[in-house]
Length: 214
Image (cartoon, rainbow, N blue to C red):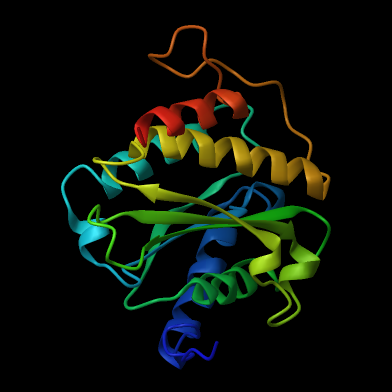
């Protein structure tokens, strides 16, 4: 089915901004190996209310960033959330190219693209599109596409609890990083979650989603 490319590619000004931020991240790091290798992108997509409704975006991002910052996390999140107006999923892939493709190499690098879903289900839900590939892969324009991405969908305070969705997203990111050859320390306890770990059990996350959806 034909669909427009509007929202899938960044304009020249936005392209330059991402390049400048990448340089800033790398300059701030003690060495390039400590530079961020995970970009968090937020787009209103097809439903801006999915992100602006109270209890939606903030709990998801807060939980996700807590896990990404925990000792043992395989990914280092960039300090800025990159906001794309009327963005579509492929805009996140271009950000990955700009943020991680210049240096190249085999290190995994990730894009988490949080985007409002198509309206009509009555829930005002959003999705998290998760992409983890090697920097060498990001270096090839338009090489990364939907077949290399996994998605956690149906996220809302009335559907799949945003904090639970963030935990599942982090677990998937860890699995994908292993698939690219990433190595990281053993998981550590998540504050306030006795007996839980920074890498949640995937089956547990799916069970939480099942109950959240009723």
